Amino acid sequence: MGSSDSIIGSDKAYDDKKIATNLNTLHRGLQSRQMSMIALGGTIGTGLIMGSGTALVRGGPLGLCLGYAFVGFICFLIMIALGEMSAYLPHKKVFAGYATRFVDPALGFALGWNYLMKLQVCLINLLGVGVFGELEFWMSSLKVLSLVGFILLGIIVDLGGNPLHDRIGFRYWRHPNGPMGSYLSAHVHNEHTAIFLGFWSTLTTALFSYIGSELVGVTVGEAQNPRRNIPRAIKRTFFRILVFYVGCVFVISLIVPSTSKALFVANSSPPGAAASPFVVGISLVNIKALNHVVNAIILVFTLSAANADLYIGTRTLHGLALEGKAPRIFTKVNWMGVPWTCVIPVTSCCCLTFLNVSSSSAAVFAYFVNLLSAFGALTWMTIAYTHICFMNALKAQGISRDTLPYKAPFQPFGSWFALVSTAIIMVFKGFDTFIPFNSKLFVTAYLPIAVFFLLWVGYKLYFGARVISPEKVDLVSGKREVDEEEERFPEQTSARHAGKWGTWKKLLDGL
Image (cartoon, rainbow, N blue to C red):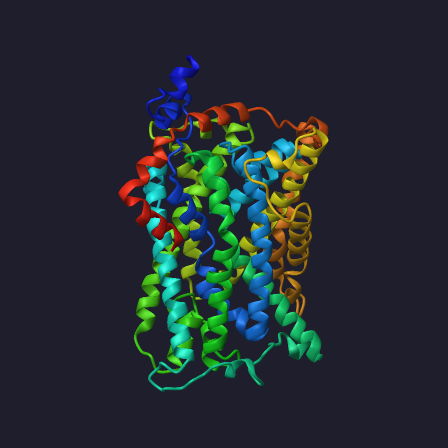
């Protein structure tokens, strides 16, 4: 493989592409600004702009805001836990590799394949991480600007800046529209139970909306200077969640009554602009033609989600292959650092999306929401549990968390709270499949749990894998190489980005 100098490169410049090529592995080509925007764009998906209407009908305006705020806090805890592990050891096996290393090889196997099943645009992912990062940066930027526009428009409409000159205020938070909604009241025959079920259903919808925020944990193997850029992206997550998710659903609750007939029609319609609560809200005050703009924005959201999910899928499959948990052919990368052999099988799964263009597309969309939220919940739980085991290993081996590149706050309470809360939501997320019983929704709600445990237990039985004790967890392998890369990353890189463009870059980053 050559001397360390030939691998690391000269002191004059940080030649990371040379490193990646020599090692025949992924390139560290994601820049700081791309990492930050990917972390933000990963949490903003079609679940927010499309799925929040259903949550508003069932949970009411207050239930909608509380549900998204609660799951947003869980998402924040998951992100900081993942950030602590990623900053310490930014390897190329994504977070399934952390489960393998810090907990149990069988758990890593189950997590990797579970996450891969969740991610089922091809050209973009064949052009290298630099193209992906740049494209995702600009699409995420457009998503952020779109949400800012929606929020500002909603506030203006609520304060009376609409064709009807109707100052709405908090009118829709009062009876009979709010503050809490009810769900399945015809079946439970108890008002308080129906209100609680309405709030609980918002948690499932919110969970689906937040799934994808862990994308930043997949990019660590291709991030430039990950010890600096990963914590920087993670630290800002909470405020972004607060502004863009909770702020967005709060504005929706102000301009759309939960009892609106138009909202009921939208929720039973095929996915599209008409199903967005934003379109319902502005239609109620006679603002015309904005649904075409929303359609264009939904297209951007969808393309960004497809681009990101295919990226995650290929890197997850590549990481599994590196650990010997997938066929070895998937370890191959081309000269640009693209695991091209992984792109083909992951892309083939995109054909499943054509199921959503049938006449029963609304029902199929509900099945996908059930499946993806369950797979996502299992991923979050495994990340939280892996972080708990990581902290136990540090303590058992006498390593202080104060020495880590990034120390997650609220620990160990935070990861335990995220683990237990997500588990409760996942177990009871399919309560409405029993009132009355719906076999199709039941299967899609709970099938991922069975698949996950089948993978976990099957791997343990076949390979005899055992849980790794905290004293024997490997906290050293691969760390020295990362330390050397970080030390050799030239200081002139920051200086080069400073100078006359420094002020503008800081302003853009802040925005």
